Image (cartoon, rainbow, N blue to C red; front, side, top):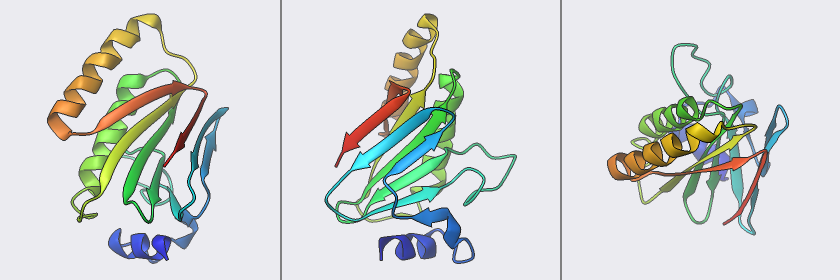
Amino acid sequence: MCCEELMHLLNAPDRPDCFSQSNVAKEHGKEFRVTTKQGLCRIKNDGCLNKSNEEQKCDFIFKACATHHILLVELKGGDIHTAMQQIIATYRKISPVLKGGHSFQGHIVSSTVPRAAELRFRQLKEKCLREHKLNISKQHFKCEIAI
């Protein structure tokens, strides 16, 4: 039921293949997994729901059906700045559509991050939290969260 509601809200009734009840997103050796006892909807965003080559967008969107948590997920190599921009762009696009008490979180799963990029990531994370009230976390290769 949750995926059907999201399909309607995101104006994507012609793209049912972008929506599933899977709790895992994998790409190029990186993995994001959600554990929950409640319903979950996974949306393949980049290249499926959003096929634009001009727009920045994150790879996956997860929605916990009962709690209204929205997880914006980017599986990235080492360009953390671009990953954050993709999550923010997706947040800006879908947050007005998904009204009604949704809480958003961003998650980056990267394969490598240069040491110099860690300080830049912390600065961008603080700015994102301040400007958008969007918390973004970063893990290497694998991330598993429970909601």
